[in-house]
Every structure is written in C-alpha cells, then in structure tokens.
Image (tube, rainbow, N blue to C red; front, side, top):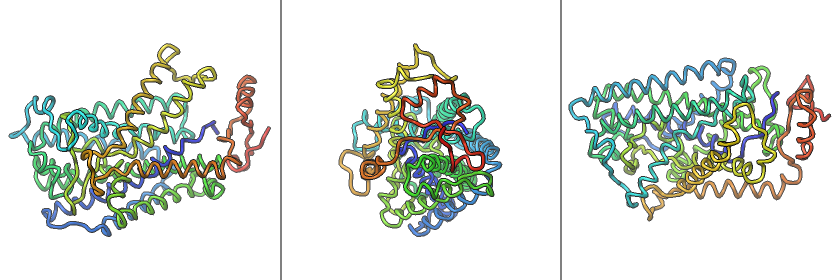
Length: 461
C-alpha cells in the first residue's frame, strides 16, 4: 500500500457536503423538468424535494457499492457525458437564438449588477462561481491510493481538471452571454425556478429545454456518484488513522464488494441523508449548506463574463444559490499545508517526480496561498447585499465555525490524548536509511504490513 497522509478534515467535510449538495441539486433539476412540462403551474413542496433527494442519495450508495470494479471505466463515461452536454449546449443555444443573439459589447464589456453591493464588489463576488467550478480538482487526490503511478498521475489530473474547466467554462460562458435574455430579472425570477432552464426555454423552446435539462440532471447524478466515492475514501483514510469517532467501525475493507470501504460509503450516505433534512426544517440553512452544489454543473450557471448575476428565485420557486461552502472548506484544506511548508517545512521538503523546480516552487506556493485566502474571505459574504435578511443570509460562516469549533474541541478534549498523526503503511524495504531516519525524527513509527490483513494489522518494525 502506498503511503498517504490523511486528507484534511475540512476538505472531508466539504466533500461530504458536496455529495449531499449534488443530490439536492439533482432533485431540483429533476423536479424542474416536471415544472417545465406543466408550464410552470406546479411547485414541489419541501417534502417532495427531500423524497427525491433521498432516493438519489440511496441510488448513489448502491451504485458506489456494487460497481466498484468498473468505477474507473465509469469515470470515463461520466466525462464523456459532460462533454456531450457541453457540445449540445454550445451548438443548440446559438442556433435557437440566431435571431436575437447579443453583440460582442454585451458579452464582454457590459456590466449589470442585480445586488445592493457596489458594482466593484459584485464583480469580486462573481469569482465564486469559477472558484466553485475548479473546486473539485482534488477528487483524484482522494483516489490516489487506488491509482497507478499516483506521483505523476494525480498532479497531471489536477492540471487537466483545472485547465478543462477554464477552457470549456469560458466557451460556455460566452455562449450563455450571447444567448441570454437582456432582461436578466426575468431569467433569475424564472417561473421554472431554474435560470438555466429559462435560458434554454427562451432559445430552443419547451421540448428542447426538457431534453437538455434531462441530460443536465443525468450528468448531475453521475457527478454525485463520483463525489460520494471520493468522500468515502477520505472517510476511510481518517478512520484508518483513528482520527474519527467510531474509526474501528468504518475502517474495515469489504472483500465481497471488491475491496472497497463499504461502511465508509454508507456512512457518507447516512450523513448526507441527515444533512438533507435541513430542507424540511430550515430551507434557508439548507441552501447555505448545499450552495456548493445546488447549481449542478456550475459551468452551466447563468453567470456570464459580464460581472455578476444574483441567481435567487422568488419564494416558493426552486432556487439556485451562489456557491460558498466548497471554496471555503477546500481552500482552507489546501492553504494550510502549503503555508506550513513554505514557512516551517521548506528545509525538510522533498519534492516528488512532478516538481516545478526550486526557482518557481516557492513563488507559486505564495501565489496559491494568496488566491486561496481570497476565496476563503469571499465565501463569507452574503451575495445579495450588505444588509441580508434571515432568508438571504449567507450561513457559511455559521456552519464552518460550528465545524471548526467542534473539531478543535474534539481534539483538545479527547483526540490529543491518543492521536499521533497519520499512520504510514509503506514497505520498509522501499525506504532508504535516510528516509527512515527522517520519518523517525518526525515521531512516526515505521511499520510493515500483515499480509493477512494489511489495513487492520500494520506491524511495527
């Protein structure tokens, strides 16, 4: 087994909430197709939304459990489905709106602000959508222990993920800005509850909209499976290191289902289902929690390069919230080790095979820290304006303070008495003497694996 440091607890929280949020986004998109079919004359209740959400989460759990052996091939199918949706959108919208396309000035130069923030700060808040779009670049990191040649494949996957989001996201944003109705309030206040559905409807009519929205919720469903798989691997990594409550329960690997952390998968499903209850109890808090994924494939949100659209539907409609929680959790998870490395650990840092070199590594790290901190601060702001109501408040700060406070309390009251850091389960024969000395200096034990049960019984050398 390859050596792997357990993922950051904040990143794990973001992934589990992402899994729940993607299922919630699927339920909203699925139900929006029904709303379109009924010409906007039906509005689903919170109970109907939760029932659809719960069915989606359970299906994710079942598929992640029984299809583990072909999950790698399925990821290729998921990527292809995304590209099909992108191609369909990029081709259909310009053709459908050929008689009313917006000009280049409207696409690239015009700015409209539907918030009560100043236009300058509204432009800054519009960064939340592209930040969210690249927010899942780390999914391949959580699957690294099941990856061949992870030291090269994982960083290459990160770069490909971000590069693809940038390129195809830019193309989609240009197409949306070219075909969106100039009456932006009619789009954000769509009777269908989904601004993207309104953009489709205005360009290609009812039948075309139902077709593309159906494809959109299918892609959303597939994204949910991917995130659940990644979240379960994070949960298992924490359990392996004893860093979670009930770690001994979640740690075992199921041989019957293809050597996967089956209990961790269903633990994530259960937690996602519990989080979804917020949609019944406190819809505003639920939207804050799910804001990271409610919009589905965020490339398809009606946020054009022209500045910022406030995508809140009227009360009683299915709404899209600006994503906030994922950037904050993910950014903190990545910012902390990068900052620790350049400030305290640079002398001990041993680069891997994928390295930008001594000349560029540290400057790139500081640029990354600055951007990540920018995203964290941005995520705390209410997007509608400086005087939010209880319904429009951004509760990200509340949710994250609860998670951070709870995690710190758990550590200082209990975990610090026994948790000594991630367990290293690599073959000692693969380590040089210098590497073994460096590991021991960090206060870590070098272990060999029990061939009968390597996960449960690593043996100290």
